[in-house]
Length: 231
Image: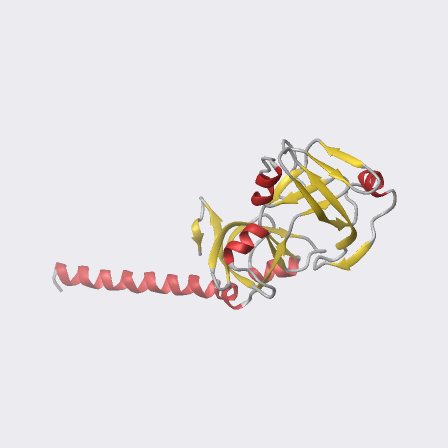
């Protein structure tokens, strides 16, 4: 066998090896493709501390409807948001009361209100702008806590094991809508009390053509260390 023939054989062997590795890699993420995740729209809302609840309403929050996450509920009470440039009435409150008040809006809402709300995960409010909340009984001047909620997925430990990902992983998700798109940098949040659901805000939902019943599929990890939507 001459030198060229040996090279040809080596090229063929290496090509077969690359194809085999790719096939194994694709098999490893097949469950992402076949197991859809519910995608829910998270409209503007507020989470209130017990002290602010009493200031605004003079009584505890009243549950109106359970939400998808266990223990969470939509309240009958509503608040008004007052920013430097605008006002928004009838803003939903989600219970139960929290340790710290937080307002979650979209970038469109932020422009209308005149606040430079950053994209943050829930609870990460350090250095964020404040806003004024009013209701029947009083007024609360929030010094900080106004954010645009970053997209994320709630998972139980069993769900995380099923999908082969871990708490705080960031993934790419393809939304199955009339205007399908891929969302990168979606944070995975794992807790025993969570029920499987992805949350996006109104701007993201409108851009993707979201409607009730929409699902998404995890394509792979997201981030510089993995490349864009690496599998």
